[in-house]
Image 1 (tube, rainbow, N blue to C red):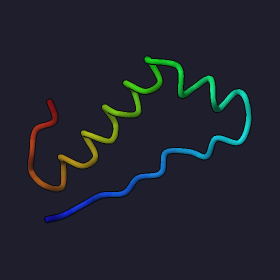
Image 2: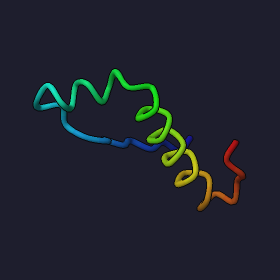
Image 3: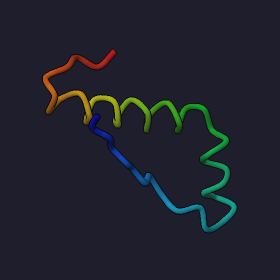
Image 4: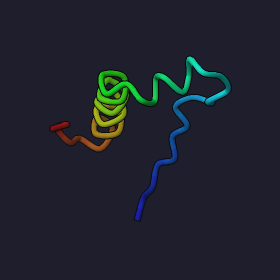
Length: 46
């Protein structure tokens, strides 16, 4: 089974921590990861 390990960013300060508590940021990153992973596999991101 294939796997992908993605490190989005390092939490090194309060501003980074606030991003992790921001649903819009998490959704944006999640969508970008899904599209990037699906594309080379010929899958349509949902």
